[in-house]
Length: 157
Image 1 (tube, one colour):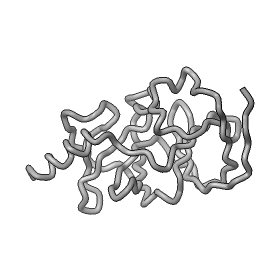
Image 2 (cartoon, one colour):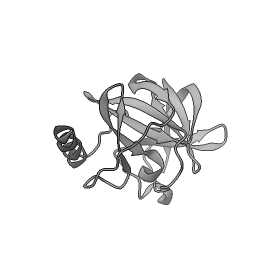
Image 3 (cartoon, one colour):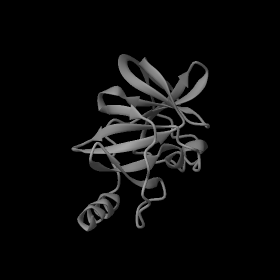
Image 4 (cartoon, helix red, strand yellow):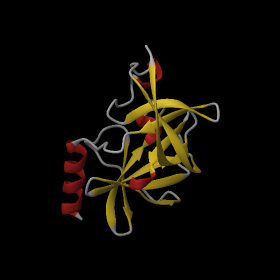
């Protein structure tokens, strides 16, 4: 299938995992920090490691590697993001910097590597410096059941 290219520039935070690198829309990034203690929760999707208290706010911690199908990577950094009116922390191996990306839109279906990944999370796939790059969708959200578990946890504390 043909690949449609567009010349729009996007500023993104580039984060590293063992399997690939990902671009997080910079407009949604709040801060980058060392990992904080995470309290496990039951009843949440497997890619939600639990909840951490970040700046006084109970924040779900999403294991980005698990979302993309390669769980159990040790988090070296949290990237706290604004998702709608809430915040989420992505656990990643490394933060590689900020880049202007040429957006590459493709009408091809996701490759087998990403079949386990949420199609609502990955916007496009391309390469950056000869590495596989996945650009995360700006408007992705945690499933409602994860927020319900988190809200129930808040009520108990």
